[in-house]
Length: 624
Image 1 (cartoon, rainbow, N blue to C red):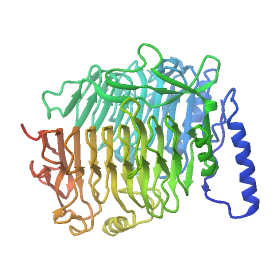
Image 2 (cartoon, helix red, strand yellow; image 1 turned 30 degrees about the vertical axis):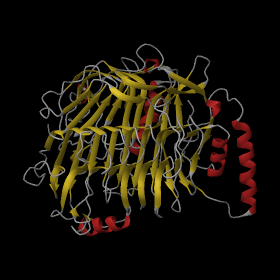
Image 3 (cartoon, helix red, strand yellow; image 1 turned 45 degrees about the vertical axis):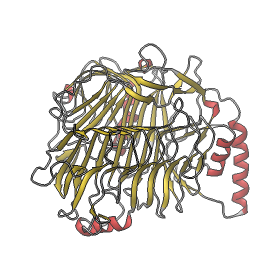
Image 4 (cartoon, rainbow, N blue to C red; image 1 turned 90 degrees about the vertical axis):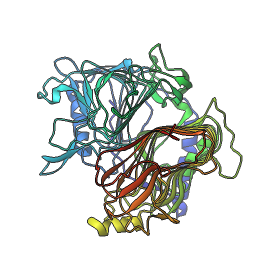
């Protein structure tokens, strides 16, 4: 096991004294020299990565993971980040299973070339948090965000657990949580924790490239399962979407149940993953792009794609200056961001085609002095995965920009720039301000699971109640969540919430979204503050007026105007009325405050407080 203690957070800014400049220069020179040399054995992944070996006692692994869960189970807005990597082999036995609970900002991943190379005999679980009554009531998963599980097999073994807990492997989560490359057997999977007191609500979620047992959706409001195999699916609440899933339920009876099922996924690329080869060397596998795909990528051998040795990556830590990171990228290195908090005062610039930027353990970039933390050129094949990007105290123009808004962008349909498990936060752990969170200007971009979040709660120091919500509205400013200007952009799992104007604006042609989830902002203080010119409110999903071709499968816009329940929003969706713009299975729903007057373009009944929790559905728009 490699086990290193958490490190301190440091600012990535210019040195202010000559001695520090010289130190940084010397460090950069040494780092650059070392970066070009092959690395043998275990790379230095920094202080927050633990690597397990199957020869270790189960009790030792269990104790390590239990200790981290105890620290992270309630650490929603904390700065600690962890990754736990399992070398190929088997962990846990029939008599002594390994039962893992996953807290905030924790990644659990196998280091095999295939998920079947690492087996957990036991469970990997997330339970409800009980937020009242001393941990006995108001139990829910609505704020179980930011955690990762990938690239391993789980042979479910509940030995030692009570009757309810032994009934399934529980994964009670909400947004910014991904399950990828899993092979689960030996019992059922439940996406709802039904073993606590109520209300047990959940708001996920995302699964891809996995082989699943019979699965209980339970209380999950929405969910996307993509390119997987499933033995069965129990139910839906508002919006369950399946794309390229063998065994997915039929959607002919929509909206009862509320399933949307695509036989194949039009465009996909699985997330890059670390693995250890037969010689014990570390590599990153970058899966190939797939068109019209169905099922898992690893069923007939190694996932198609390319392998990059770890020595072709610059392994960054929060103490590394941005100019060093950029220098390594300019020299042709890929970038691996180890777990931690990176304060970014100038952009990390990705300029070379086919560059991979991979974060592990929920590596987090925070804008400093209004910077754009991550700026990706309009070149083909860049992959950004596993990174969280936070707005800072000074307003940024954008947090992640893909391509130039005014210059030329070179792209190809066969090698799209891909964003996988990339998350955004405006507010929450601290005050944040940005004009736009995610801006995509390049053509041929794939967004595979993102949560773009302007915080509806946090630890910024605002008062409780109406005054606090008004302070949040005026302080944590985020106008637009996702702005898509490029053509031929595909989003599989687009979750965007609480922005102050359009949450999503899609100006590019031939765009496709497969599952869209949006909550309008909770905190507009008055109707006057929530006006789009003469129109009441801003739609949760806006397709530009000049767009001729666009397709959305499975979309929902929710309203909860807790700061002023009298506020109205005219439409959940706004799109141009043209035959090439098609919305398939969309809905609005009221969460007990405010009103959305129509689902789309004046069509659909109000989602108001006479039908709390009961969606207003439109099966097809334009209506045939």
